Length: 393
Image (cartoon, rainbow, N blue to C red):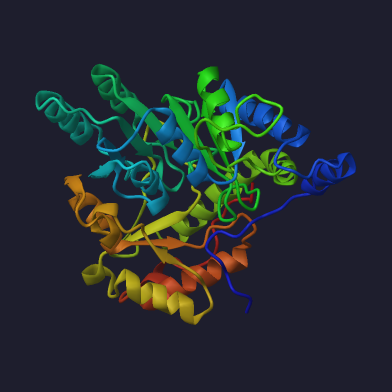
């Protein structure tokens, strides 16, 4: 059996043609027409006015944090249930993260907890410099109340949509509501440029500054003149060509990942002690990853038991993100709540969700999960374990 990965890259038919254009033009450096085109086409796809293509989603977030003025002594409120890259740029700038718990509807930042914390910060006369809102596992957070709370206190909202390209919030793309939004094209994302990211904003001055900082902040002069420090963060023209091809198949990739979720849901629905990540009513998740929650007493095994069983069959799975307030590197950070995120981490398991998975691959995962369930024998006899009676989109 070939190994099933959690979320491997999936290239199409168009990327090679764009890459050949880049080679034919001899634009191989981190500048060039493929980058310009990728930025324009990405803006058109997500509904942003301006964009800067950079070397990673982390680079984009670091630029965003610097662009809104985060510096030593500042606090930045950040979702706790996320990957470390959402919080690390806060520390890069010498500031302190404050981690905010999730809510159960979307698993993203709890708007009520955020609003209460901003009110407390205002009363003590020390508002945070920014809020970093993460859109988790392909699902948008509830942006409107979060943006309203930030606007009420004059706090910059940065959206980390690294995992949510292709999702919607009231019909629009998450990542385009705050002052700045960032996306990732890492190899495990729904579309990839191997490594890369995008920073978007409707403020053209912010994007100009982002591009300047990303190219070592060189001053306008015939020689190399630098009055401040920047970064080597711009995307390669060749990788931008890959991104242009990937962007053409984004909708197809979202459909396929949502199909994966429906396969898992239909074949595992009703198993005692097993639930799926819900879809919030205000938008559509891209289902970048399908995640299950396991109650060990009802199911008969823990999430870790299931992960190990999958690994024994050469199937990659992974626990839900360990909350940032539990990470050793942030042991001294302040937090607001935390019990919801801790429970999701304890019981959550991310299943293989790649857009190239076949029904046979999905069945292999399902059968392994059922093999761990206390009631699997009765469940299979009563319902069967075949694929959904629905055509592949």
